[in-house]
Length: 170
Image (cartoon, rainbow, N blue to C red):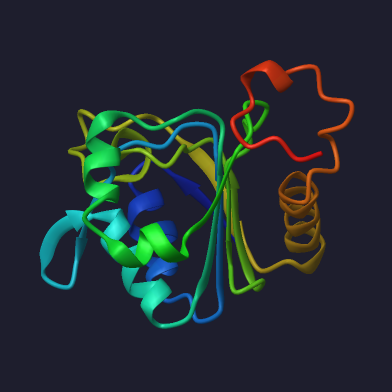
């Protein structure tokens, strides 16, 4: 399966696939904001989805390039499961947008984890985004490999952006 994803399909396809994660959810994004989604009959922060996944034993990893804004941080503090269980890494060089679900599906594209890119925004407020959602092994394996290299700090020793890094790996 390979599917071209554009605009609102990020919300309808990619985010909703995240809700179904059973074992792992790895998210790589340059920017993360206070994203809200329709979930279980109400409009709620995406952090609620992450909290519920963590409570079910799903491993959730997040790599992002910069600290999120105050609205995200306020919402973050409302979810003890996220505070305790979310594995998070800050890397100022990350510009990729990857969402890897259960090591079986991957989104590779332009959309950050923000309301304008992926959230429940109206069509006239939403960013124009594009990406691929697939189960193709060669694309999935490459995305997992790239995410894991950053996660494990492969590039940290020679990185020229250490001054901006909040989570130095030595």
